[in-house]
Image 1 (tube, helix red, strand yellow):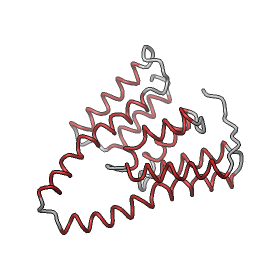
Image 2 (image 1 turned 90 degrees about the vertical axis):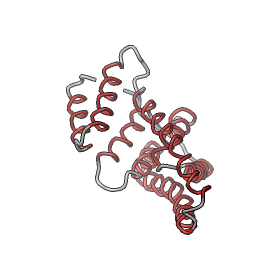
Image 3 (image 1 turned 45 degrees about the horizontal axis):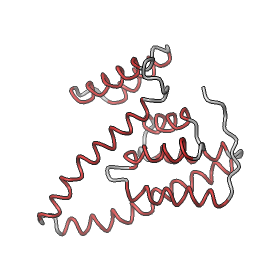
Image 4 (image 1 turned 180 degrees about the horizontal axis):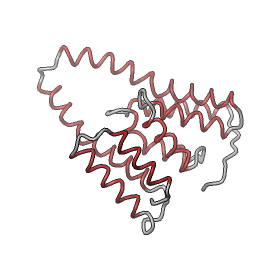
Length: 194
């Protein structure tokens, strides 16, 4: 378990966080979850504003909870604020990260969706849609790698990787609801089998 983090963040740091999420929003082809590797690099590796455990918990909680999966961004902002030492900072963290991730992509999606619908038969539009699929898949695989490498010890993490691979196969090849797979993973984790 990582030791707790105690941050001292100034307004320049909050603005930097907001600006970074503005840029991530424009890269979030396939959803905000596809930018998770960059969020990890920025929050955990570069600035040390979140621990690996807080990062993973933010994603796991938001994915298991009902509602939009972009809520993991709010949880990351919440945890950064808590690490800065107050509930007011946690609320500020939620606002900074959520406004940053939502504003550009929402405006761009609204404008592009209208234009794309009007021009859906153009060859360039169809090619763009098909060309983005491999990028989205690669970003999601990168996300799974980051989440799976939480222990940073590949020799001892093989049960985790085996569970991740088996979960992926079950989701791909069966119609079992994702929540059953998440529940099984939580149960295995509770007994510390992975």
